[in-house]
Image (cartoon, rainbow over all chains, first blue to last red; front, side, top):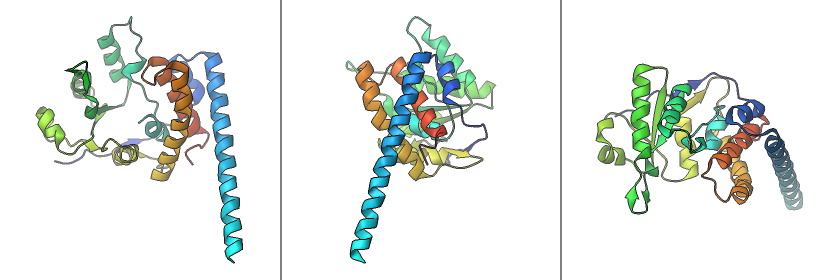
Length: 63
Length: 171
């Protein structure tokens, strides 16, 4: 038995606003969700930056 | 699954989002005919109050029929264990299921086997990162609604996942 050929996706990425509209998410909830994503990305960026500094410090210490 | 599909630039829909007053079967058929792809995880056939839930295999049947009269529709079968489909749904003989082993990483690998994005294929690392970001936010959404398996929680998860995907959260 063989797997089917892969599906090729050519459509552009949907926007969050259009997605919220299609799914019937209220404007208020949509704003809350956008803020949630912004916070998560900021937190993630800070975590990554901290990790990079730690790695650099360890490398410098070893050198 | 939501994280993976959104990272590929798809917009997931699910029977979960169907409000109860609507006739469920009509809405399932509407969703199937509106979507280009459908994904059916047969490992989700579990016991509920001692009785198995047959919704998933029934929906596979509807997807197969949809693809017959609308060949543009593509359906994908997912299973946790290899060769189990041959035992449980032998009518689909000749169709291999994508095996995910009940784990998110293998499910994401299965999606990369099933899908390809013409412009830029998301890497497994990007898919895993997207999954991590969405999982972290899912905790808050679950707290908000008491469950993730409801219409509102599903909608929130999809909007958040699409937002992560478009803002480069997966990269």
